[in-house]
Length: 136
Image (cartoon, rainbow, N blue to C red; front, side):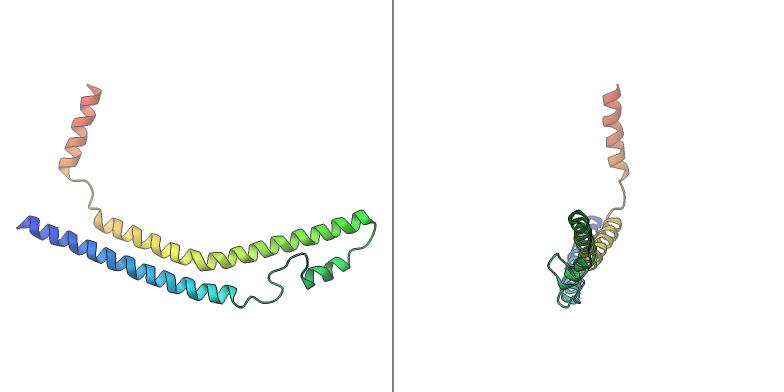
């Protein structure tokens, strides 16, 4: 009788866990769909720059001096715009992906903690017997 009750309780935890996984997955997918649309569908002009974009070209026109000075000036502008674009896109990707990962990690920790009631005495005794056999 106790085994049957324990089994049904364990089966209930598995069912709750599966439902929870589906809920977490659904929330994550909805978040990601909305965040991708919000972060990438309407990027303001000037947020993503490359060497042929108008804003970079305008800054490069201001470079003057010898050929070497102009080259170094333009190179610094291209590198700075590339770095800025990288950080901008990395931030947008983080907004899309980090919240679902945190939600999944929190759910995993909660279900693992709920399901893990710790080792029972029988398992501990078996471990101690094996350990003492090896030492003796």
